Image (cartoon, rainbow, N blue to C red; front, side, top):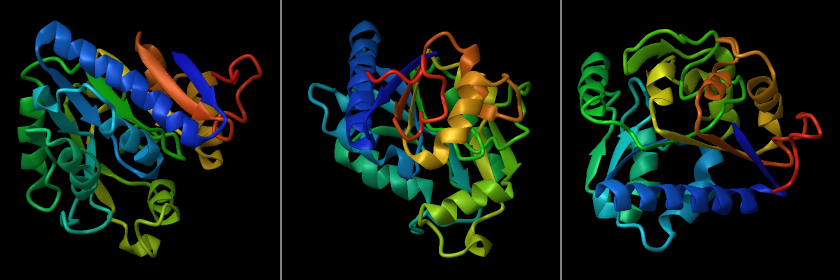
Length: 250
């Protein structure tokens, strides 16, 4: 795991985006196209703003997959991850091929059909975040580290649902859906490269558990340490609890 620490998230986002843009360009150069997975949430704002502005990316050669989505939330809702990706990534770049999870229809069919498309070819790059409870995508603790199923229907725990309120997506926890579709841990780890953008002090405990604690389903994002090509981008606040040798400024 390669850990990069920046003074603030204003610097973190462009740095992670520069790394991601290089990986996208490299995949397109080597294979003529690239398949990516994109995360959502407040932690990805600066990263996606910088990535969509990056020069010399032929977005026509990019195929996009959705990491997770609430069940029962229409795409028009401000918290919908489909809306998020459309507004912040798909429309700004005009990516032509996108596989979005429709959690407002039959979630099992959405999981099956997008999972089938996902398994047609390898994924080059996965963009992810780490939740306040250590979740990776919507794999809350204790996460399933064993299943090979591409997408799962999961129950969201209280900490996860409260995070969504804290980020301003919902007015009250009672409004947050209790279920979601999420890409499984093992499926995420199948990507050739993983890039995690994780700013803010509220993520510090989760970052320490996942980067320095035991690799365990109780800290789902600790699974990232089982992958050979992971880059984690932090700011000084999210890195605050890491050991001094780890939280060296980039």
